[in-house]
Each structure stands twice: as C-alpha cells, then as structure tokens.
Image (tube, rainbow, N blue to C red; front, side, top):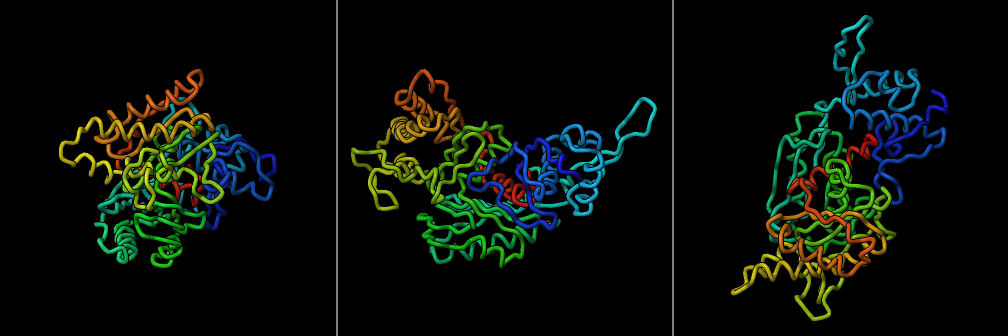
Length: 396
C-alpha cells in the first residue's frame, strides 16, 4: 500500500488488525470522517473504509470496492485477504454475468459469523439484553427484573451479561451497554441516581467477568447512534430518551457532543418549572425529569380525576422549554423522541412542537422536525451494537 491510498472515507479510523477496542464515537470525533489521516494510521483507516463500505452497500467485487473507495486494486486485494483471515469478511460466490470474461467473486461482511451483545439498563422495571447480528438484527432476547435493593443491581447486570454471552452460539465481537446517568469515556458510570450508582467502573467489571471487549455509554447516546446508523438521522440531530429518567444525545455537524465532563444532553435535571412542581429523584424541585420520565408520567396519569391530555401537554410544554435554547444555540434540524409511544406520540409531542416554535426564531427554526423514532424499545440495544461495530471494526 502507498500513502496515496488514504482516500475519501465514510468511517473513522478503526482499530488495528489486532482488534483492540477503540472508541471511535468518542469526544470530538466524527462518526464518519472525511479527511485524510497520517500515513502511520493509513492501514487502519483504509481497513475501516472497506468494512464501512461493505456494511452499508452489501456484497461487491474487489474491483467494485476499488472504484467505490478510491483505493488501488492491489490495496483492496491485500486488505480483503487480511480481513478474511481475521474472520470479518467472507467470499459470497460469483456475480452472474451474461457476457464473456471470468465472473467476479463477491465479498461481504460475514454477517452471520459473529454476534454482538447489547444491554439496555434504562428501564424502570427491567433490564433488557439481546444477541444481535452485525446488521443490528436481534436473534435472542433476555431480560431481568430490576432488583428492589440497589445493592443487587450490579450482580443482576453481570448475570444477564453472562446469560447473553452463553446464548450467542457464535464468536462475540463485543458487548455494548447503554446505561442511564453520566458515563465517562472509559465506561465508568460517574453517577446514575436512578440506579444509586456512583463511580461504577461498569466497563472494567464486565470485561473482567466475560473476557470480551466491552463498551459502556449513556443510554441516550447509544440510542442516538442507532438512529444515526439504522434510522436515517441527519448530522444535526438531538435524540431525547424518555424512560426511567430523561436524557438526550447530540450530533452537531456529524460530531458527537459528549461534553467536557461527559454530561452533555443531561436535560433531565434542567429546571423547567419556576412554579414549583414535583420533587425530582435528585432532590431538586422543577426538574424536567419530574414531569417527563415514564414513572412520573404514569403517576400523574394514575391520580384520581387526572385529565390525561392536560398531563401529557404539560409535560410536552416543559420539554419544549428545555429544548428551545438548545435548538437556538446549535441550529439543530431534527429532534427525535425515544420512549413509549402511547405517552410521547400525541398531545405531548404536539405541545413540544408548539412550545419550541413559540420560543425560537421562526424564520430559521419553524422547520425543525420533531418525530418519534421508528425503532421502538430496541433502540438502545441496537445502539449498543453500533458502539461495538464502531469500536471494533470502525463501522457506523
């Protein structure tokens, strides 16, 4: 390979051939990088580019890959041989031809040859786990009830992870976990009030338990990755995740925004009520989460004489108040809501849009789209798979 083979890329530079776990979704790094890289990083960059192209476009010949990526045929041939040996790509027969000449051999990701383990710890009643293909398709599901005693939560997560690994029936590429709370770039849960966790090295603990690469991120950030990779979200988007708590993930110009202290998007504990309101789990009064989290909404709707439409519209208005300055500051074009559709999709979403438009510059922000994700309750699980794909293969 020559230096000139570092070409236009749709992927971040991935891990080395040894498969070291990287964080290509980390601070200040584009998920799909478009710039050239240094010569010493060229091979990993080009390897990720080939894998990314196959991931999104499917089986193609080596000549197709050369044309699509701009890499020379010699480089493509060399990379494909290496990736086949590593077990991530396989030959898929020949292309049908009607004219003369030798038919081209097609190659593709070995989509069935590996599995990914995903966990979603964001729900109030149960933890979800899944075994997924490299395409993000779920082939097995497990779940565990959230223990009443917070001291038992970590053991429950470990047990669920072990069960999923045992049910993979194929080599496991890695484990991705979407956790509530603030998670740093080493997979430590700095704080998760709803789980009563502080400074829990969840990534390190699980890696030691299952001897596999493990990546842990905030559940809303994981959901955002799923929406970006599988849901067609653009480069300027905010995903609001409503579950046991309320959080969000941000992309601006195609770049994740975790924040200098890993707390970007923590809108659940932004005060949106100067008129009092419910007491939040964090101890403050007037937090968005105290109106908008699933347990909060369910409690309000269950009160005697509650007007369901009024409860949902009030929560939607509070969400619009929280979102308006973010949309104005970042010039976002899209807000995606993730959570229970019966609660979010209807009066709540309508009130959010009305409030957002009333509190932003109409000339520029009236066109901001607010929509529900179409990925349902699997969004964090599929986002956990993207974390592993990105960290292990440089694919997003």
